Length: 263
Image (cartoon, rainbow, N blue to C red; front, side):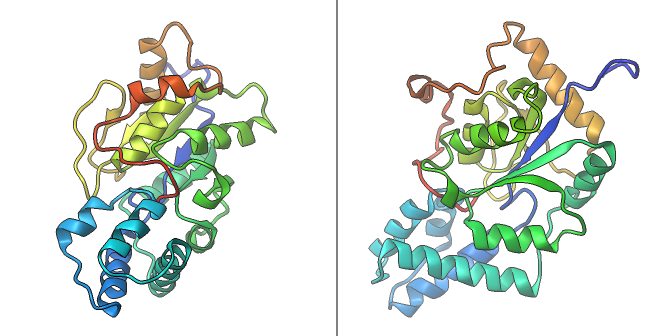
């Protein structure tokens, strides 16, 4: 644990959204069921589980195979609109997320939202929060490569650096719930906390595993950053430079394909 007199190693928290801040996965699954059935097909729970955290483009292709006679973009727009409508009726907050956001806000720790959902859904969730917690918002429609590629996390850090050039990857921690999301955060070089929700995640030395955000605090996140710093004495993660040749070595098994994802 950090000694009280020492400066905090934590400058920014990078938040995933679906499954981490809000439990929207049931909304996505319901939208998938409705869309497939509207086109005369059937959609099983097992099929839905295979799409958790995956690319929206990839998911749309699977839905086409299940009988949805629409283009990829039409499918993405239809699913997103359904989930936005559900969120407007009720925001399904994950335990501890809002409390931790408030804790960080009171402590002056900057936050960025790094979600592969597209802008309309991200804006709906952000607007439902009691304060403007997120200084930076990176969505799936603002990056070329979605999770599990680290582009979104690297972009968030670069945007935070615009007002604090001294901030680096070693000052950040990511909160994620899915295999593709955790893979993206690990690949970016930031300390990573995995909070599995719909799909279990194995223990792994590359990230910290929590059961829930409930009861977690700034001190817990500082510990995660310190632990990463101690395990990486070389400081090789202090830069936002990323080489695609190293990506495969940090991809978690089952992380899926690249592209925009509802994560």
